[in-house]
Image 1 (cartoon, one colour):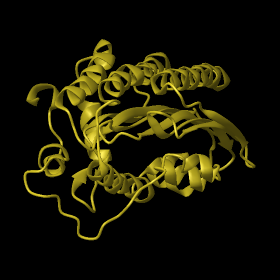
Image 2 (spheres, one colour):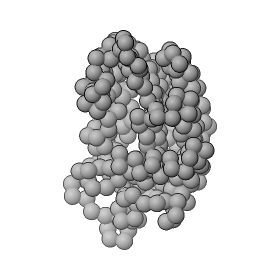
Image 3 (cartoon, helix red, strand yellow):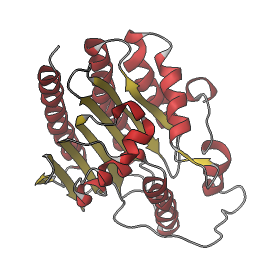
Length: 306
């Protein structure tokens, strides 16, 4: 298949997915609207960043689509994949992070992407990646089980081995090594997917992208009216700091975007609007805050243990 045909198919899906997710999240919020900010990359390509701020439910959320291309791979990519040196590249994807106002609604992240690199006289190198993960502050077992059940069901048509593989990959990737804890309760993560051929690999990526709303919208509906006070809000803002730490210290996508000359505002729109750090914070023993640390910030088989 010609690379232009591959790119056209993927980009058509990604732009439709961005539209669909933004519309559904606006409906779930009931008040806020996404504002679109188109941008162009000087080295080639661009995208459309959409941000919803100060909604009734969503304090800040970003849903970005990008398609960037260039003649030379960034250092972060060639370090990860040395065979990409000397190739031009196209990279496209949809990435989103939703930071709700109510501390009882988890933060959520999702991303689906396609990458292809070429040089004359050689076969193209391409792959799909993506996933979604959940970061609760005050976890509810039924929410976590639902999140992972949707992930399991999305991948089941492609074989029973994919969910445990991608679930483990997510646990490993979203691990804050400097804190010795997971970013949240995980979900799915995959990268370098190409061994099944283009059509099936694309179908797997679409299944993951399509599953995000099914996984997240019921959690918003269940938790958006839960009363909360200053204590819960303070803890939410403190835990949001872990999100910032991961994105700036460990996330490969952030590094790739900055090194390829992507738009900084769009790359960093995943950051929470408000956050705080507290030196030497320790939750009160046996408190709901302590339960997050003892019961949830470690890999578990959420489908059988809850």
